[in-house]
Amino acid sequence: RKFVKLSHLDLSRNFMGTAAFDAFVSNQGFSLPNRTLVHVNLASNRIGFRGAFAISHLICACTCLRMLDVSDNQLGERGIGVLEATIGLHRSLQELRINRNKLMDQGALVVARILRTNSQLVRLEASSNEFSETGLIDIATAVASLFGRYSLQHLDLSGNALSAPWPAEPATQCIEAICTMLRQCSSLTSLGLRRVNLFAAPTGVPRQTPAVFAPLSLLLGSLDRNNTLALLDVRDNRLRYPTCRLRFAVRIVSDALAVRPGLFISRARQRAVAELFAPLLGRQGSTAASLGGLVLRVLAFDA
Image 1: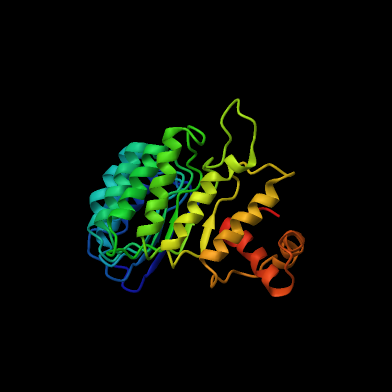
Image 2 (image 1 turned 45 degrees about the vertical axis):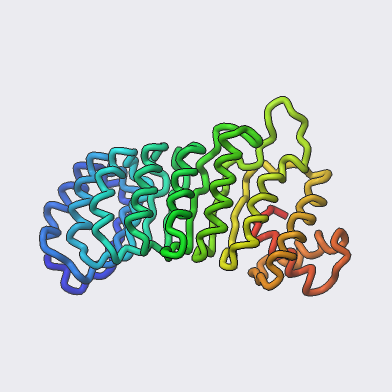
């Protein structure tokens, strides 16, 4: 009952519900401090915001907690609010995963405060919530505000779709905030922006590829002051312009390479992409292969 040697607790995908989870925490001796339990995975248990108090009780006992996953638990903004103070006590916490919890902009404010309090975080996953431009701006601003005092390396905000398409003012402000974050956060190595509608063409305006790729150009332009980012995932952002998409993509990638010539990317699927890009680039061999890898890894285009 004292869990003398237990270091990892994985209860994910049990769909326990609030009552069952409360009973589990009450009956398992988590009232005593535990210095060995460092990894707690509670994902996909339908705990709900009422169960957040039980989560808080559990992690309070884990004095050396390094990873906490509460994804897909329908916590909502009240639930993440309950956890905020408890998470703030854990200076050893390095990974926090709060994906798919129906968090809206008030929840994003809580996440921003957690980021400021827990500057030792290495990974934050907050994908597939319901943040609008305002919420994304709050999170990006929180990361940027800790310039020089941050250890954050991985940030995933995928699946939080912008409500207004580019170049509407909310979307413009959001992208500018993300660019500022990229310039100022010198520790960030990966950023997930998948399915956020960054590149949706305005309603009623012809789908002009240069305009659609403008946000991408801004994001890549911010890399001139970022020497650490190795993965920028912008898949599934409505890049459906087959006739001229490739030409502009190559130009943007070429500009990015000029800024980051030393960037080395995984070789997965490089050969097929290199063959696609080589005729347009007029380059052969390893250089084209490197460009192909850059497209897959940094821009994450679907070839």
